[in-house]
Structure formats: structure tokens, C-alpha cells
Length: 491
Image 1 (cartoon, helix red, strand yellow):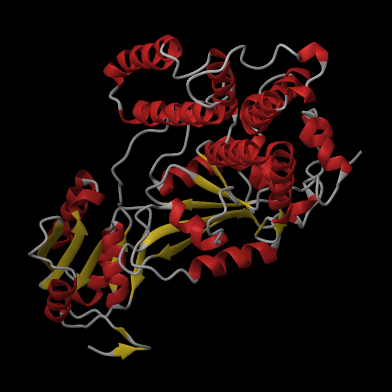
Image 2 (tube, rainbow, N blue to C red):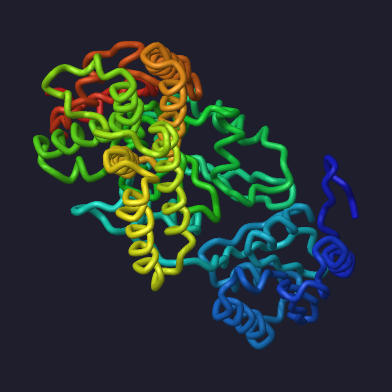
């Protein structure tokens, strides 16, 4: 076989191609690698495919069409043209190198060789195993669509395309992983998204050097933003096509990884993680009220416990109207230790709920309520007020729309409790200040994390605080540097 720029070309001798694929792919060894050989107009043809990634009825239909050629055609000199015309499928292409053959077969396509022809036909008949679109568990809404992304990248791009039927929507396919060759799709609106941002994301994906990304979108995210040990999420994950489409219209870029139901939205700020689709499916006033309640709950999950601990340690800081705050009697265990144990108990329950089969989850909830509830108070392990504030803090975490943000806030919450317990008022103030400075210094893909608060942008901040009616939201956020600033014609 000839070489072209380090790539092996398809040979005219079909047996050479067969030997290469047996050695490279393990044809005849791996049971899931399908192989068929037939004689058409006196010439040998071969088909290669992965059985679990192709639909059997389509393969059978193709074989029937090829066999019928012997009964209807006689011109051997035009065998390649005849076969191409008989490949009854909407997407048929040709390739010239064996490296492409290997990649296409493993992707789920059928590759067809013809003896004496120095190219192969590729028929896209892939049908990945998976589930049907359903509403994501972590992003449920009262009103709104009930479909969600699945593990099928083709299906996911179709769900997005259904919402944005614009000829300028681009879905560029890249491959990541020397062994996994995972499909990664970069989606954007050509005339809206910043070209520099698109090129930056594609270059970062192309620079990924790894055997495979079995953890799918999470592995890609860590290569793109490289946040190290910073707990806060620098990209946003979503399983809702409507949320993804809305961000595309704003000028963001979407990264969809095959085998993952979560799409990555870039760039994002801290406040993007506080948004929820439910706010946009309600009246602006109701949506604003929901948003304020959510903001309050998130602040509560961050600062309620360390602030309450500070008041317990230094009651003089309390105004007379709030003098009732604090335990009425000393417990057997110091208050800071009780708080840490309570937070750990909540995490135990969360992990247990994930791993507990559904039929047993109710029983687990009853056991948890009894053991960590009243009995723990009766034996003196926890004070009743500790249980109350730990529970309120946990509820605030569950109200947070972004799971990644809620986990990061829990970590910061524990750190603030510890420094407050050790250093009192000074520890609390310094801890809160360092937390704000950490957020202010973060950036993701050259995007300030606390925008529009830092740097300050009043109009954008009003859109964060209030749920502005859609007819008045005619400008795209400036932080993504959109090519087209206006979402609607200005009258």
C-alpha cells in the first residue's frame, strides 16, 4: 500500500485491505466487528461495521440492494458508480485512507470496499444505544418543555436545531482521545458568537492529548478551563435544550460531548449559575420573586451557619430584638463540632439517597429522620437549634440551580464555620472578605467571574436582579462580545 503524508492509502487489492483491518481492528477476533463479503458483477466487495452501533434492518436492506445488482446490471467497468447509486441511504461519502476507514467503522458507520477500486464508500447508518429524551431530574420546571439531552450526540444537536432553525447555526464535530476518539461538537451562531472565543475553544479542544475521556464532558471541561483546586465551576452544565438554545442566542458557545447528557455552556459567570428556567416560564413579577427567594436561599447556605455561630460565641453582637438566638443551655459537645457533624450527616444522607434503590429510599428517610432527628437531640449529640440552622443551610444548598455551585458553597460554608470557631469576629470577617476576593479574581476563558458586579455594569446587573420581560431584553450580554448586539430590531 502507498503512504500519503504518513497515512496509509486504500489498496486496489481488497485482500490487502482485509489483512490490514484484521491486524488493526481485530476483525475475526472481536465478536462485535461485523464483516460480509459478496461477489457483485464478478468483483469482490466487503462490508465492515460494528454490530452494536448499526441498525440491522438497514444493513439487510443494503445487502439486498447489492445482490439485486447481479440481476439488473451487466457493465463491470462502471461497478463503482452502480454500487454507489444502489446504496439506499441519505448520507454516503468516499474516503481514501485506511486511517479514516478505522475511525469510521469504530464510529458506527459501514465501510464498503470494492476490489480494484482505490477508495471506499462510507454509509452513515449508526444507531447508538440510549434512552429517549426526558426531563432532567436536576432541572425540573412546573411549566416548560419536558425533553432533555440524552447520551446521543446526534440526538442532542437535533434537539438544539429544533429550537434554532437558523442557517447560521454551526455544529462543528471534533474528535478527542487517541483511543476513545470521542465525538465533541462545538455549537454556535456564526453571526453572533465572538470569532475569537470560537477559535480559542476549538484550539483548546484540539490540544487535548489523552487516551480517552470516559468521564465525557467533565474531562473536556478540565482541559478547557484548567481550574486546578478551585471549587467553583467555571463553566455551566445543562441538560435542557431550551436553556442551551437561549445561551446560543445570547452569544455563548455550546460544547456537546458524545455519551453525555450534559452540554457545556461557555463562557459563564457566577450569576449564570443562579438562573433557572422556571423564572422564564412565569410572569416577570413572579419570576423576579422566585429569583430573589433563590438568592436569599443561596446566601443562607453560605453565611447562615458561620453568622449564627458568631452570635453564639459573642452574644454582645446581637441586638436586643434578637437576643433569643443561641442555645439556652450548654450541650455535651461544642457547638462548632455539632455544626460540622450535622453538615457531615446531611452529606451522608445525600450520598445514601443517590446509592439507595428507589424501593428502599422511603425506609432510609424514616431511619434518617429518627436517628439524626429527635433521638440525636435527646441523647445530647445535637442541640435543637443546631439541627434547625444546619437544615436551613442544607435547604439553601438544594435550592441552588447549579449542583456544582451548591457543592462549592458547601465547602466554603464549612471553611467559614471553622475560621469563625477559631478566630471569632475577625475570622468571620476575614473569611467572608477572602471569599469575595477569590470570586473577584476568578475568570473563565477571559471572562470575569463576578460580572456584571465586578466590573460594574448597571444594565446587566438589573437583568440579574429582575426578570425583565422578554420584549425589553433586546440586547445580548456584552461579556460574551457578540458580533451582533441586538436580539430584536430596535424600533
